[in-house]
Amino acid sequence: MSQTYKICLLPGDGIGPEIIAEGVKVLDAIGKKYDTTFEYTEALLGGIAIDETGTALPQETLDVASASDAVLLAAVGGPKWDTTDPNKPRPEQGLLGIRKALGLYANLRPVKIFNALADASTLKPEVIDGVDMVIVRELTGGLYFGERGREYDVEGAGVDGAKGQRAFDTLMYSEYEVERIVRHAFETARKRRSKVHSIDKANVLESSRMWREITHRIAEDYPDVELNDMLVDNTAMQLVNAPTQFDVVVTENMFGDILSDEASMLTGSLGMLASASLGDGTALYEPSHGSAPDIAGQGIANPLAQILSVEMMLRYSFDMNDAADDIARAVDEVLNEGWRTKDLVNADTPEDKVVGTKEMGDLVVAHLGA
Ligand code: IPM
Ligand code: MG
Picture (cartoon, rainbow, N blue to C red):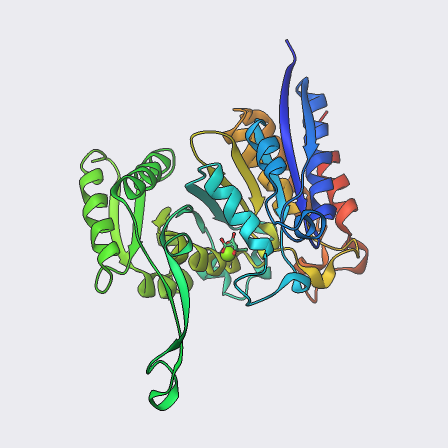
């Protein structure tokens, strides 16, 4: 019997609409091959939602998203909406809001070297050869969601003892939040190379000391998985020094945000990294990169991270592992044949191998296998 899945599409801003079209193209091709129907409902999120409704996360978007089997997001944000005024809406509120509202506490960011792109990295080939890790980032707690505020005209807060302003953010975690993300990491490790690095700043932060305690307690349930604690500053260094030591990296929200951008550069381009945000209900899939407003509308953006997020969707939400493997293989083949979007080009790339967003999507579809 043919299966039908409801997918909420959130194109967002910048290159978002261009790349999500390629994700949909690939999904449709997969649907044909595997006798599956994907039904799409588009909704507003981010800057475009601010323009059209005054808020970055309209209630309607949340309703559509929660009623779907999965959410495919492209990217949000752009200079048009940049502001430091706490009273003005910002596109990122849409992203953070939907993560929180859907309870997407586990953000999986795989970092794997594509052989064909080994020379796209700024690091030496012998350093990145064999890199294959997944960053498991806590996504609904910590500094991103703790109490924050700004105070004005505070005595002594200004320069030379004058009145001035003061701002604060809070890094708070509850036990259950640490427990579920760390367990997720151990479970993930079991399906991989059975190694977990838990990243913290336990030499300074109380929240990190609790994180470490809980992690060690959980580790007792997984004697087959190797656990390493690593301080976040050391991790930043190890990621460029000896990145092949990592298998599963689990860490709190803000550390994960920073380390995942750093790790993405091992692969040469942020344009290749997909991510899955999972919780107990509908999951959300998005590229790890932003909305690249500088190249929006030119048809040159790399759609592969979006397409690889579709791969993750098929795997995690629909259990369509063969279809997901098709996409992974197709992307590999296309790259091995030398096709490149602009962000992946180097001095040796022949001009006739440089393709735009749509062409890249077509190439992947052509390699999916009928
Ligand atoms: C990411 C992004 C977001 C984050 C921004 C856009 C709010 O950098 O998904 O990593 O910090 O989580
Ligand atoms: Mg980030």
